[in-house]
Length: 434
Image (cartoon, rainbow, N blue to C red; front, side):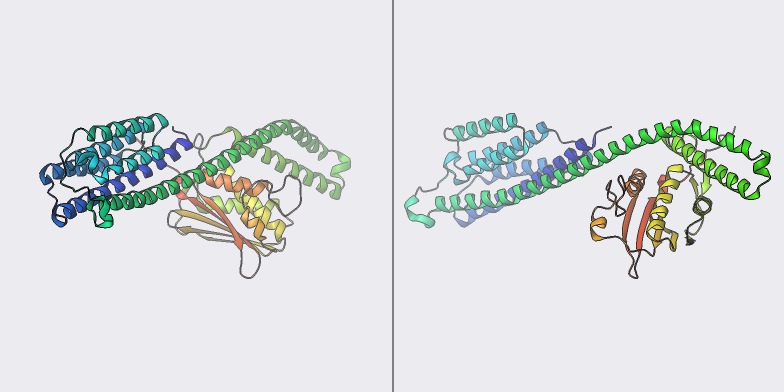
């Protein structure tokens, strides 16, 4: 599999090739217009047959280039180099047929050299410089004379000076257009690379956190099991069983120990079991109902919690502990901001599952929205805070989804989790019967 940086470079190379193809079409139209004006406007006889044949070859090459880059993805330096050599070759042929080095459009070689400097590797650029220089020198010796009077003293009335002016304007305009577009492509590439570097850093951070969590879960397993056994024995001792209040407290301690063991088991399951290795089939409705029931049972101090399932026709999916923990994290954050009321709404937008968590708290501050999903961005002031939403955003992104946050018009915050159904649907095994 190619790296993300290679994909970015490929995208930039394809954009540059497309710009070069567009520039070649402009050159074709410019040559047609120039030949027509010189031959029919100025009355300077040109060999229209050979020049038209050269133009036809250039058009055929550009059409072939367009067809090639519709199916090809990777752009190599040698391919760009060959393309520019074709442009230099056709320009040389046209100049040979129309005066050689005495043709004012001979300075279009500079355009090819500058394009090479922008697009090619250094060795290719210098090779192109040598080739264009050799072509220029050769055109001083071998060419078809052009009946163009060298009346340089006539100023702009001189056809040669007019040709020079047109050549300069054409060079300048094409360079501005092309280099501006190339620079825009490079800026986009740099922005994408910066985003990929940021994602890589975040994913490395998540891996470190996962290793720490997995190690802590393993270490906590033994003492939790020991406490569970001790509390189970205490429940049968006479001085506990004879005191209902004391027995209720022991039972509550046992319940909390079991909750801690379930959390540790969930951490180990998420860390050591890849998606799809042992999938558990469920449905969207059942998954959300169980999630809500579990969250309500383990947050007895929560105020009013409303849940609305507007997903529509139920769909078979894979029950994923990581996804369940993700939604729990969002609900926990909403509960901290709004202890009196929070809400969860499930809906469907085409092939997207949308989970919306609402609260009646103070909402998100503008600076929090600007840094939403970044690690250690928390308004609670706790050391290490802000990791919950950071993990939520990255779990959703791993599934191909997204998480957005905002403020409700009447006060409170809203967090929307959008997940493609294709990432969580359950592919039922086919029965290959005889």
